[in-house]
Length: 585
Image 1 (tube, helix red, strand yellow):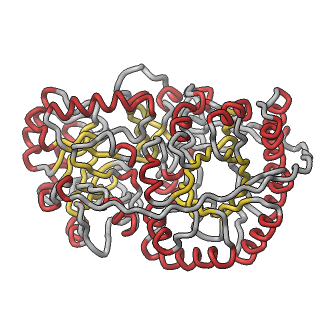
Image 2 (image 1 turned 30 degrees about the horizontal axis):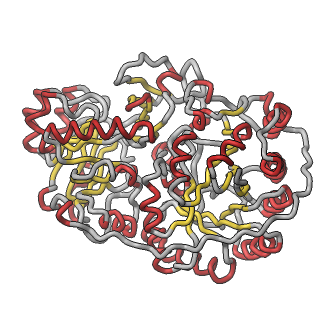
Image 3 (image 1 turned 45 degrees about the vertical axis):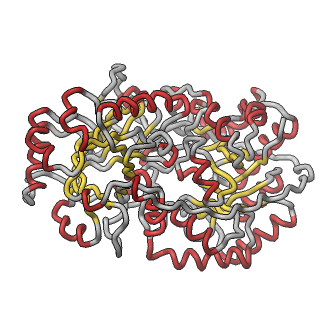
């Protein structure tokens, strides 16, 4: 049984000392910029230098977080910051979310080890192909992955890091826009306001609040799988929390066993939300995963804990960063941008009627339909314009089903596929590829990386204003109308609110404290998408967007009636403003 490293959080210098004293092999922390916990204490430049000295003297690896999306205007400052880190701090690795940032770091700092953040939405072993080419030495897997998928990724040979304890998101890792859109605080930029922890008007008042993860009862399984590092969440937590939790996992690793009942009670008393969940890991995704921080939980956490001095560590060598390999774009596999101009009609809720298609399909640049529904016989006349939209995330157990659906789509005459993850490219060989909004493209460096993968079109992130200083070898796409997708969940929120009817397509809504209603639409395998309460409207900016190189304007339809869908489409085609209630976000 191979013993993984134990990786502990450090949101402050006191927490760093607690992690080291409790036996962490590795620590992760952030500077004052470019990290996903901007509200933690974090470390200024002098503190980072001191922290590095302490870690080296203690034989503890130090990983620094650069795990946010970065705008073009910030890239120069980021590179200057990394130059300081390389010369003055010498971290063992940088944790990165933004693929564009990863490309720039590989070009400018080839000797620095890069770890792919969980925010990168790593859901399949196929992702390792792209990460290795960019020189990543480790991947922090998405927190929603089951045991079997983790084991499959370990076999790729890339170092594998997984979260084993602490807060997790109800949204897929790196896929939440709720805080950004409704509160102006981007989770992808380290400012999440945690709307998932708020009450809503439902029988279950906290339908989005997931219990903290705890895999202390699965430590031996993780060791047998061969995971490289076990990660404790908690850069916003106190030094007492960091020290106590780290000490428990240190003991379990050193003694090669799982937690006892008394150790589980100890962990609950340190911090929990109505207990813990291991639902994602054991692939038992249900209502039992949800809970809140109760008064009872708070009373128990008042107890002060002590932890033993950790045993001496065995020094380990850091992996040598690989030389980056950048893909060469193959224009023969891409659909010409000149043939991709106009409006994309996208349906994620109610499907278009025959009357609507007869009226508008001929004038559309593309028609996006869910993969599972795009081969209905009535869509046959429009097959060449249809792009099959794949699910946002695909687990290993689901890949064969998706492969068969894609074969059916190909036989149907469909030539285009819209993907949300790099691991989906292998499934879509032979299709023209269209990159979805989930790729979080907000800077030119990331845009250039995806161009190299022979995409035909790329949708810019809803967190941008849609403007880039230059064009692209791909057709650029932007949502001109539609409810912004706020969350994609592996759990069925509909079942958590009102009860799921077990249908292939369920619809519900989430009502917040002020009465705003957020539509929820089921996706394959009882996953859900939560949409903004109002549709975004940007069609009056079409001229401006075209000047910035955006050739495709998406009309995203979810809950609209047939009459509303026709009105929006007609107004878009005729450059008229519809009389509707909308938001700009």
